[in-house]
Amino acid sequence: MSVTHSVFNQPRPLSNNNLFLSDTPLREAVARFGAPWDLDLLASVGQQLGSSESLELGRLANAFPPELLRYDARGERLDDVRFHPAWHLLMQGLCANRVHNLPWQADAPSGAFVARAARFILHGQVESGTLCPITMTFGATPLLQASLPPLFTDWLPPLLSDRYDAHLQPASQKRGLLIGMGMTEKQGGTDVLSNTTRAEPIAARGSGEAYRLIGHKWFFSVPQSDAHLVLAQAPGGISCFFLPRLLPDGTRNAVRIERLKDKVGNRSNASSEVEFDGAIGWLLGEEGEGVRQILKMGGYTRFDCALGSHSLMRRAFSVALYHAHQRQVMGKTLVEQPLMRQLLCQQALQLEGQTALLMRIAQAWSQPMDEQQRAYARLFTPAAKFEICKNATPFIAQAMETLGGIGYCEESELPRLYREAPVNSIWEGAGNVMCLDVLRVLKKQPAIIDMLAAQFEDVKGLNRHFDSRWRQLRLRLRKPQEAQAREIASQLLLLATGQQLLTTLEPPLADAWCQRCLDTRGALPVADTVGERLLLRASGG
Image (cartoon, rainbow, N blue to C red):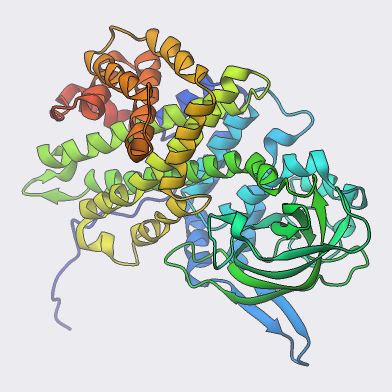
């Protein structure tokens, strides 16, 4: 047989590297913001998740998406979802690492929110669909700890366990539990006040009482969960209900799965449409308090969207940088080519800033009793979700460009990351919803502007671009306009990021970030010495 060609100058795919130890900004931020005690475990988790075996599980879970089993062979209604074994193995790892409940443990150490955020970022680089049931459970657990109906108090121990249990059994017989959510309907979407699902009391009305639900949900997240938190119209207004999959007597609740969503990405995760045919739910809180109850969870789930987008961006960049160190063009590697090096440095700067700010927000979430920290988390969580999530898609597209044609083919990880990216901008409130929320916080808590001014004063004079941008924004914040909400949210986030970097990062790197992100006249190229340092940090040096 003749030999047509030999294969050379084709980079090896990125695998069997430590996702945590190769990320210097993340390592530093975890230690700085209160979780140095978790560094060894994070290194172990990073090693396991960066293995070729874990990456293959992520691929398989998406290549073989969940399947709806509506009926059994006899025609009995099932309403079950069947997953590939890779899904269950990934879920076991997430639960074993307590990504779904670490801060809610009675003995949770200080900085548990920061440690949990770092674990979330590491897992998100391998597979994103499994993060949906994890973040739903994470957001719901503190609400259930405070207001779970007395009939279900035996749910708390398995909710707080480190076990994953996919069996369809009563909660008392399970080692671990997961919670989903069902808020939106066809006619309303984000406008949950327009929900038409009815909830009628079976006997008495009030907190902890049972109601019968008739209606539907257009998006019902993770239908295989052990219970869902749903919104419905009770006699006293929109209310929040605890809807178990199995009723206390062991029979199935009347939740009918109509179909699984055929989504752009997030293929491994089951999102569904359902109908409530007299399903029974128990009221959480009082009638009419549904939106207030849901908002208690909203901050946690929105923050996870920002973490998830960051993890996608970090993985895409790692793949691109690894490729650029190997691929040669005209006698030099891509990373040595000035224009490509600039693009990689700009992406590394972007990740430096995001990492620092996300861990700072996680630190604020760790201190709910501190009024200023609570206000910081309340303001910057929706801002981070808006800005980071909308940046993920073009960021990953640039990584695909770095690889060229092979980055556009399914053998690469990047197409899956690219398809995954838009969902975090949509779930838990789209960009405009987040920006209006930022504006709402500013109007309801005007003291936040004084808090920001005090924090920004600490870095005054360190960088002229930062000082100039803060002066401009402060004038706009005197009378913030709704039409400017997107720009205000973006500028607030950039300034908060700049403040963190100017406080903690090496001055040449912090100045490079400020010049790149805050100079209204346009960015200059990153200096060679700064670029070398950035790419070294991005590789773990």
